[in-house]
Length: 456
Image (tube, rainbow, N blue to C red; front, side, top):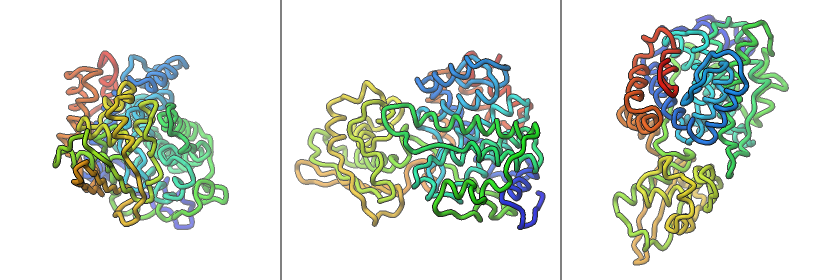
């Protein structure tokens, strides 16, 4: 990989790092990580494409017209790459089952994978080229998050789109084979379009929208740079650059650290269809249900201790739509206790008024507890009418690095999401294609499998 002097700007150093990156530079661990995430992304996007938010996004992409370049996942149309990236990112964020990182709980795949796949299909790229784009896009997104968080999130910015637009840009830039100089400009243009607010919870589809512009703007930034449009080389550390604008405290060194070492992508997966910080509470409920099988009619109280980092989020005990339910810890605990699971079917508008769910949700009392080990840690204390007490503490939820979902569990999740939409045979074909991504001569062959009607 090309080295640049330390006096270069951060964008110039990053661009030199990525421009010199090829398939041979991918470690076996990175290849496995991005392929596992590719399977998960497609499954989640196929399912999400059938939700109202996914349907609206696909319709929007289709009615805007343009060249038939890239596939709308879960649909029957091919649209310009920028519009496919936009709609597929929204679909993949519409069932709250997309991946997460460790630090900021952002989602790699909606911005990065949507941009990379749309660009790769447009360009006729190979599977190896796709894997490079996915790995470098995720690396870029995580490097920036490490430099900016938790200050960025605490100021009310949504990490997935604000950092994701840079990951999407690098992914698309790798597909388009931009030079280091062009990548610098693309990053500057990405910074000009970075956006996304945490004011997204409630009954609306607002949260689903956020990664859409990030994916689209990433493709746009890379394409504009390829055509010769120049961008600011000081976009990260400049006086009015990204770090100054989006954070109060930051660590720019995280953006350029350890270029000479294989980058470790820490990607976690979701087994439950709701906001990730709620998963610890769900695991607490499932543990108590499994060990003690409590009579739900005889529960007196449910106390949920949460680390102060997240104690004041997700408190709505009376969600009015499934969008609200997916960010409601009390509802998630209630449905986990009643159903023994918390998949998309449990977060359903028709379920919200069920008497038992209302009763259990109303019992959940959330209190901050700084003694808990991690920012997402939860301790659930259930007191029964006879005075018996059941306690469960979860620091690492299912799907985390420390408590992972194995390949078989990811495949079960994938099949459960894809089969109802595309059928079992098509799900199997997609899974086989993902497994052999590096052998694929044209990413369009994979993407066509994700459309209604299969390969065309």
